[in-house]
Structures are given as C-alpha cells and as structure tokens.
Image (cartoon, rainbow, N blue to C red; front, side, top):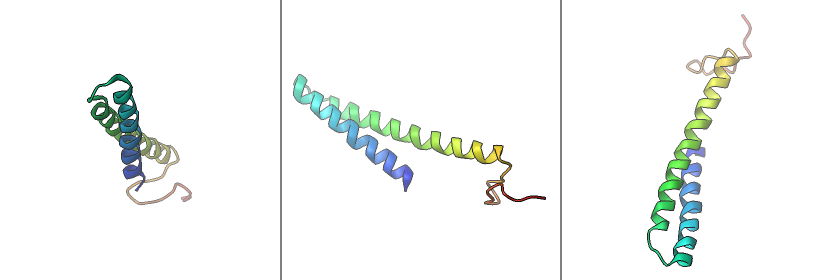
Length: 74
C-alpha cells in the first residue's frame, strides 16, 4: 500500500505543479512532464525504501526469507 501511495502521490503532486506551470507559461506539456517525473520519483522512493529496509535486516542478521526480525539468538 505504501508503494501505491508513493507513486500516486508523486504523480498527483508533480502533475499539479506542471498544471500550474502550464497556466503561467501558456504551454500544454508541463502537466505530462510532471506526471512522468512523479511516476519516476514514486518508483525511486519505493525501491529506495525497500532496499534500505532489506539492507537493515541483513545488517541485523535477519533472514528476509524466513520472516525473522533478527532478534533470535542461537
């Protein structure tokens, strides 16, 4: 759900910014460019967050495949 919100939020925010620029500058393509920037940014944020959490789990000794949180002691 978080990935969906990053992508949708990025598209909405950057499309609104592009729409505002279109009105100010009298163009018609900034809204599409803004939507694309928001899409790419949303994917980037979602993947960056996923890789950061995976790296944190690996550093803590957790096995992401087993679903552990790294608190188990042998």
